[in-house]
Image (cartoon, rainbow, N blue to C red; front, side):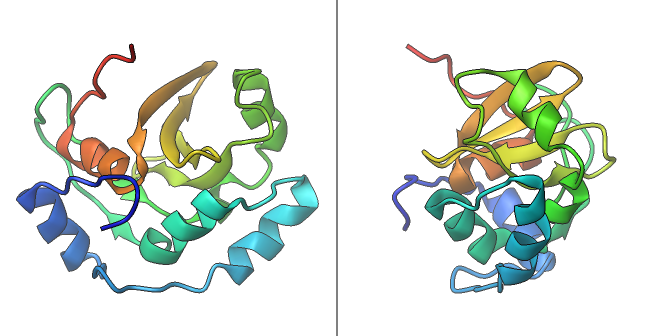
Length: 150
């Protein structure tokens, strides 16, 4: 288990495994890092750890979820090329900390992770905190809201 205190519901774990994930999976992140660096994105340790385990996966889930429709993902940071200015404009408290990890499967929202390891969904002029690392990913796949912050 990683430091994100992950919770992977059985259905989300099955779908991740069907997409090619395993707990010991290790993807090479160097290509993504090289592609995004010229735009000013700096891959921080939390992004590196998340993408090493989950990068490159496409998980096309859909249907009703716990709190909203289940959200499939494509975990390829290069899907966010050209979006650095937009990322930085969304929330001053995360400016420069958000690193792209991909997008919602249908492309309606971008996905990013901050330096603390929290996954965020970005759309229009909004940013939604989803949850830490693998737990945040599972929440998207399950259509589950993050608990309210204190």
